[in-house]
Length: 331
Ligand code: COA
Image (cartoon, rainbow, N blue to C red; front, side, top):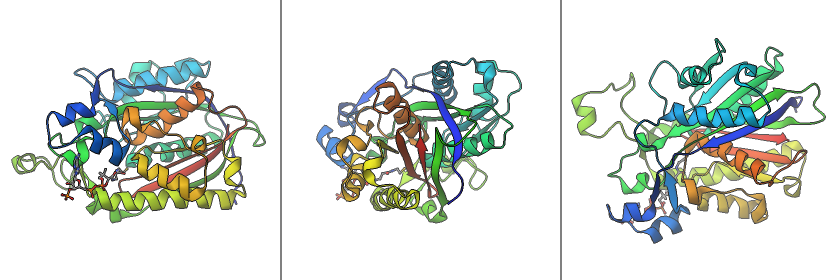
């Protein structure tokens, strides 16, 4: 097994828009019910941006909270990574917008695209950059405005997603006997293209009257197929992490999974024999916020005292691509 990566999650933050969309909002506008949404997904409400808000405004708010939680100021940050599937625009990157809003000068900044697994990819990228010795504090953000890419005429997808951002400041530590990344996994498999994608708007199929008429700029998903794969991957990632790290389920303080569907999370929990308090969920209040869901969960666990220094925390995510990844950390 590779050497653990020494790093400390020095601070975390999260931000969500004020505007709430309840299940009733959808029930009044399309052929669905509060009961269907709750029982099939676990979602009760989700947050969505209003005019003037965007992925970068949420990302910046979460970042400011994480920097202050770490006891730092913006100028202490040496690198900014933003995981997002809903960037401000093609370029400049969302990370450049955040860098400007934080007022940190010429700090390097870039976006990373791995859909719902994006923050796990970004977190591990940041961890390896810290290990290079060139940085002391790295800001890793997951931020999304899913409400800007879901089709509010498609009842099978629009009820699932919400907006939000989560951020963490990763700081270098001198040794690996304290806080560290103990185990990691990253993978991708292009088979996801036909099951979960936004078909138009990129170089493959640029915007045209046809793409707009056919609603091809919206997220398209074959929910049932994605569901089956997500259940399988969530289980496999936790199971293989336990085996490869040489620990048992009881050693984990909490698993923070990507919040895609309560039934997906619950099915993995039961198969793994984890106690309910060992599996974090907050999908009931935010829906699926894609790359923001894991860092938002991490922040909630830290701020509510659900995890403490020295605890083992396992973060896992599966998303479009397909991409998936996990990170086992000792806080
Ligand atoms: N309200 C009422 N009925 C709905 C509905 C809604 N909002 N959305 C879909 N339905 C209907 C379907 O049209 C279908 O009707 P039919 O049987 O007459 O054809 C029926 O409900 C069952 O659809 P199905 O897609 O099989 O339901 P499901 O139990 O799989 O639940 C999802 C649908 C989307 C909630 C579920 O598949 C899911 O969560 N998928 C994975 C989501 C995910 O993880 N996405 C992101 C990956 S990061």
